Structures are given as structure tokens and as C-alpha cells.
Length: 114
Length: 114
Image (cartoon, rainbow over all chains, first blue to last red; front, top):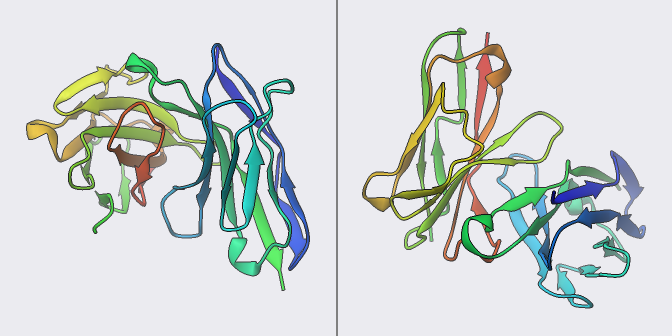
């Protein structure tokens, strides 16, 4: 079945450090891939997405590239800020009919220290 | 524009008691989801509505859980009777298109069953 595997957290970085959060997936067909973020005390919100192989999603300095050959969608940011502290969820979606729902990874908690 | 609104934010009940959660989606969003999030896990879909119709309820434990979305707007999720293992966060989300994976989440209702 479809599934998402994320690197386990928590991840603790100093401000301005480089961030990578690994995400790999298993899916039939060609899913869309997403990163959602949950800031403290808030609901999940879409950070970025990619709908086909080699697409790069980007938002707020974060990037992720849909790699079909390695079934990966790793999240990266060149210089993190304290305000990036949150839980990050990788997810996939298979469009069409009743399969149009999200399958999430377990989440990776990021803490950025000043 | 108002986001997805859920209530109550927190609920503590004794086991075997009933509980209900309410969700008001973003105006104009036809697709509504209820997700369950256990501690340290990613959200898992319970039920998905397209307007008034439940198009995917395969993961809803129907012996004790029920949901409704009257008039295709607000939705209620009920548990009766609650069990200790039901302690979790219940998330409501909505989207314009049920197949894109771009969901807007509420802040969630945290249930504690004693």
C-alpha cells in the first residue's frame, strides 16, 4: 500500500544552519507529494507541493524536489530561523475517486535555537 | 477570510461517555475531512465528505464513531461510547477540490478519555 517514511526527530539546529528532513515514499502510480507544517498552537498548513517527477516545490525559503528514481521528497532550507520551529509532515496523495486523501508521515519536530 | 473552525478545543470525559466535535469549513469548500492524530503520529483519515455525501468512510470505526454533514456545510463527529484509546486530536480539514491534496486544517479538538 501507499506509505510515507520520514526521518525521526527531534531535529535541533542553530539559527542560519542548513536543514534537510528526509522523506521517502511507497506508492502505486504517480502520487502528488506534499510538505505540511504545524506551528505551535496552530493547525497544519500546506508548505509546498510537487505533482510530478522532477518538479520542485518551494515556499518561504524551503524547497523539495520530487525524485521518482529514489522515491524521495526531501525538504531543505539553506538558513533556518527560530520562527521555523515546528513539526513538518511529508504526505502523498493519489488523485482520483475515493483515493483523493492524504497519507502522512509521522512528522519531524524541528527546533531552531538562536 | 475565516479558516476552518473546530470546537471544542479540549474535552475531557470519562470512558463510556459520549462526545461530539463540531467543524465549520471554509466557505465554498465542498470537501470536508475528519482526521485522527495520535500523539507522535501523522494524521490518519477517518472520513471524507463531498458535499453531504460520505465518499470515503472505510477507516471510520462504525461501531462507536458516527459523522454527519447536514446541508453540506458544518459537520459533526460523534463517539459513543468513548474508550481510553480514543484519546487523541481530532482534526477537521476542508478543500475546494477533493483530489488536489491541498487541505486547510482547523486547530483540532484534543480529547482525553479518563
